[in-house]
Image (cartoon, rainbow, N blue to C red; front, side):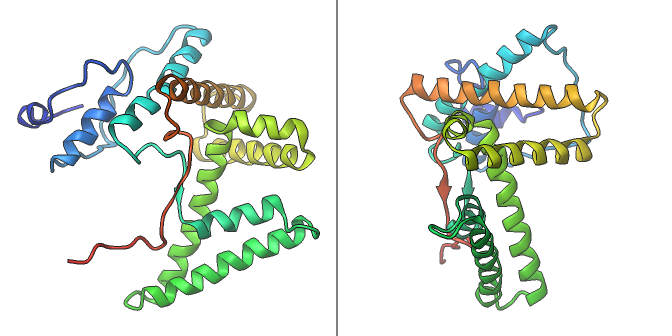
Length: 240
């Protein structure tokens, strides 16, 4: 992290009460004071990783515990899911199905919601070409689905596991989400490890981090880092 000294002094420096997440807290405080923070992917900072699997998992767990203290300092910034109700409905409908009919019509309902909101976006953005509005809507729904899948296997995995123990549909959904997420990550990242070990480490990472989020939330007596945030779509721009 390369910082202007004046900016760090203006923000009050690192919070000494935070053992984890202190860098995130500092960056957000810098931004709130009008400073510009930029991620530069061309820079690589190397450091030694934990020497054993157990210590690495413990580290991931402790990182997860930082979510609740950060949520206390930055309300609304740590929601595991942030999307519009329409994007949520697009994916929830095929998962839970339509009562008394089943998942097939649930999938059709989800597709209808997705297409309908994409068409509605064209009317909401009259200054944007229709093709671009449709593209933005489609990408937004896809990103929402990826976010939900990631959150289900990372932060919400205790709830998902409990549901899978009592529901066959929940087991199918969880297995599908885990399988597709791992496959997409393997294709995108092309890790040096073999697929089996890569998948096991990815699952262990999600379980450890998610457990840390729950433990930190319990310790802080807060639910900010566990509950979703639904926002209007497209976002409302304040007038003036």
